[in-house]
Image 1 (tube, rainbow, N blue to C red):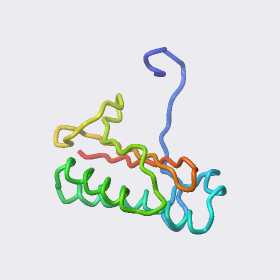
Image 2 (cartoon, rainbow, N blue to C red):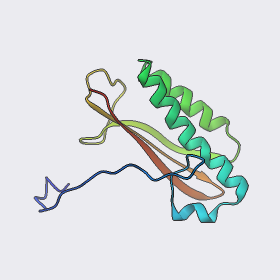
Image 3 (cartoon, helix red, strand yellow):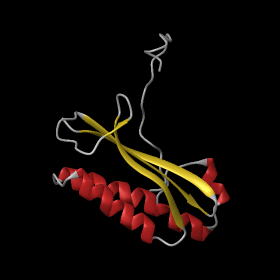
Image 4 (cartoon, helix red, strand yellow):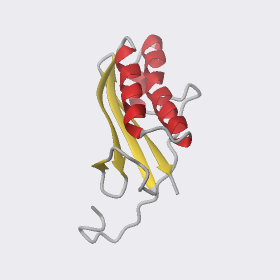
Length: 124
């Protein structure tokens, strides 16, 4: 958007700050009970499984399906979306073999609180 609208700014990406459990640090986490915080860790667990699968050259469609199943089986977690996208334009992708970068984005609800997280990978 900055390029398209010719804004004179630079966007600098940084790593997500995480709690020891792997949950992305967010003010929304304060609205969760201890049980909810434990449930929410499934988000980062799924992203980590996708990262490991890509490192082992597993097909993206298989990894996303497996992760969606894990999310759907987790009591207390309601998946809104799980998408793999090209970070340059956020267009959905189903194969990473020709990409130099990949982002996997997830959103879901725990105890009525909407939580989001993402995984960014440099592939080449």
